[in-house]
Amino acid sequence: MTQPPKPPARQGRVSLWRYLRLFRQDILSAQPARLYRAWMAEFRTPFFRSYLCNEPALVDLVLKGRPDDFPKSNRIREGLTPLLGNSVFVTNGETWRRQRRIIDPAFEGGRLRDTFPAMRTAGQGAVGRLRDLATGDPVEIEAETSHVAADVIFRTLFSIPIQHDTARQVFDAFREHQRSQPVLNLGAFVPLPRWFPRFHGRRARATAARIRQLIETLTAQRMVEIEAGKAPDDLATKIMTTADPETGERFEVSEMVDQVAIFFLAGHETSASALAWALYLLALFPDWQDRVAEEAATVIGPDGPEFSDVSRLRIARDVFRETLRLYPPVPMMVRQATKCEHFRKREVRPGSQIVLSPWHLHRHERLWERPDDFDPARFGTDNGKGCLRSAYIPFSAGPRVCTGAGFAMIEGPLILSMLTRAFRFEIDPTRPAMPVAHLTVRGKTGIWLKITPRDETGRDRG
Image 1 (tube, rainbow, N blue to C red):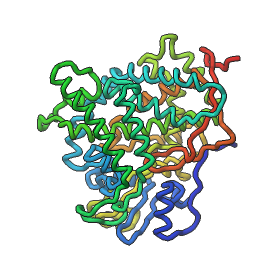
Image 2 (cartoon, helix red, strand yellow; image 1 turned 90 degrees about the vertical axis):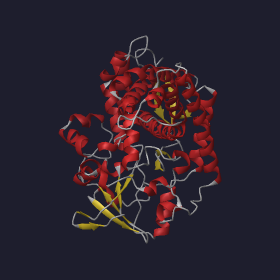
Image 3 (cartoon, rainbow, N blue to C red; image 1 turned 180 degrees about the vertical axis):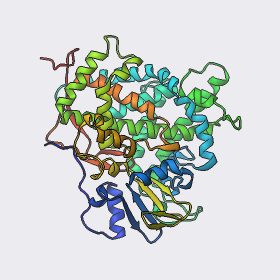
Image 4 (spheres, rainbow, N blue to C red; image 1 turned 120 degrees about the vertical axis):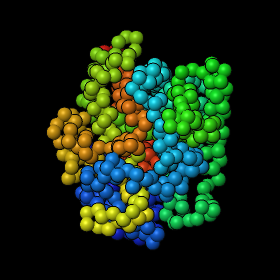
């Protein structure tokens, strides 16, 4: 039976320095196979200890039960600081709570309906671009999903298309930043004082500075439009005009730059990854692809999708949900213990790193039936329903659940349906995909698919 690609696990023990080299190349293949069965695993370094937790009760404790006792680890921000600054992704305590009080209202249910037309337009743009590529020749699909995800972000956040000059420059600079910024920074493994330089690469610092400069230009322009009463009613305007209900303060331009940077990283990069893998899985399993295409042809009218159609794209939703299970865009999350804990009869000292791995939890052999198989129908079974509640965290969980989770679960099935209705996607056997993880899970050498048109009924032409 065909199984989706999975990176080989590390064989045997390795030295710390060998592990760090493997980790820098790929987070996933640096890990031992036992993590797919272990409830907890301890890792020791000369500087700290970390504990990977797969037991649902421990995951629930860290994310939902006592989240304040397990804040985001400062080690994670070491490699991200040049781009993300003091964004909601890396902050803790009252700073984080204040940021969420201002940001969350922009992503409430009613606002999702307001952003839907921008998502639809971005999806229609993606269909138009792929028409020129639907020749049956191999296409690197990650580049295309990255393009449409960026288009969604700019349209919903700033009401500008990806073709806008500044949007295009941010997109290009971000791709360059990805190539120049490794996930591993010296400060993530060695406890350095605050004044000690972090040795970020020159290219990484330059591209991060360029991205932030461009975002600051967009944000400053929007501030002027808000003050003049001429700002469009989009996510940026909503966030910048929302006052903290406890303090009455709003984001300054510099604070907004931090938040937009993480919206782009989280909203663009993760959506691009999930869409690319979803299309790959549908190409690998054409029977499911046909079901998604037929559903889309039935649900979506001749004038394009409406917001009310999203709830009827049930097969596309389950395919996207299963994609997030097999290829969670963010494969690992790191928290830090603030006090002495006892996990599974082991002492966990303050300062220890608590690693929660959606990648291993979603494929855990003692939780999921056939964990490495692609089966969107699993979510209708007792096992699938139970694991959805206890062992499925593509957007994290608890108070720090991704603000844009609802946004992503509309965007993903919608664009997947629009693309699959218009085109058939096939595997390129000469270029098999293999997942590799740095900041997100992407194809090691890209994800290559052959694309051909379908007719309006979702069937192949000719």
